[in-house]
Length: 245
Image 1: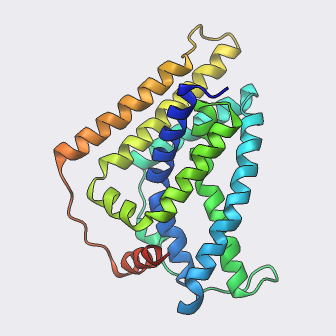
Image 2: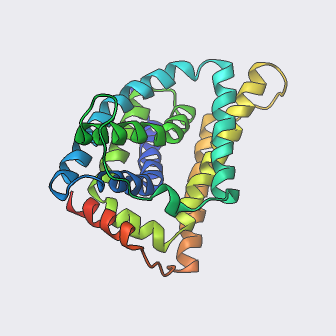
């Protein structure tokens, strides 16, 4: 039976996936810029199509593993680390976005090695959203639907999403606050299971907190207003490539 909370959860997961994946799409677009111009769009498309299959398998695996207490602890700590790295990490985005000429790898041609890199990096980038999804809902169709629709939404309007989060950075900050909250929720769930604490956060309360964080970050971003952003030439090329898809 489909419950209203399931539909709400799918919507939240789609929004969160779109916010988290927009910048990741830019990174993947930069990877294919190492190929000849005529192959770039095709490589990006094929890499993302292959990533869909990996994403479904990874999500189903996560739905099963998240029932294990130690996985909840590791997942919670990992999400808290990601939130910490986002707000307090030191590192230049330009370094990870530095273009590199496509080269053969592991017996694959330069083209297929690039496609494989897009698939692997897409899966790596999706770990946080998969963990959040399975923490919020243990219903397989909910987490898979939310994740897949989020990826589709990100791909369809990737360029627009990039411009949106560049103009309104608090939206992404809100997404990472949600990641931190889910990390705390998972850690508390683990501590409750081992009878270390008596607190267990009901799923509806967790969903309500996520909604409030989304709403607060949106209102704060609107109140603060758009931030001028001058994209470097590499960002511009990658965004144009995403817009052409």
